[in-house]
Length: 105
Image 1 (cartoon, rainbow, N blue to C red):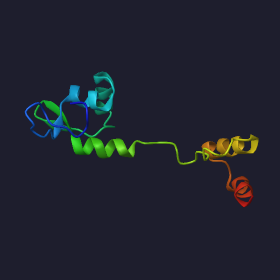
Image 2: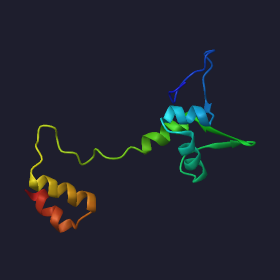
Image 3: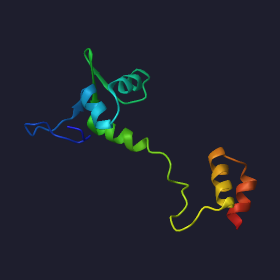
C-alpha cells in the first residue's frame, strides 16, 4: 500500500491513509509527516482523535509541490557562460532590463 491510489489486501479501495500509510506513500518519515501536519502544510482530516490523509487530496497536493524544470536548458544545448548567467538571473529574479537583453538575442 505504498501508492497514493491503492486498494487493501481484500481489494477494497483505500480512500484515506493513516499516518504510517501516508508517510510510506509519500516516501517521508512519520516524524516529517507529523511536522507537516502540525504546521498545516499538508492536507489532512481529523476524525475524532485520529488524523487521516485522503488519498485523492494527497495526490493533488503532491502534484502542486513540484518545482523546477521550467527554466531548464534543452538537452541538446550546452550551457555556456551566458547561459549560466541567465540561470543565475532567473533564480535571483534579476531586473527585467537585463533579462530583456538576453531575450532579444
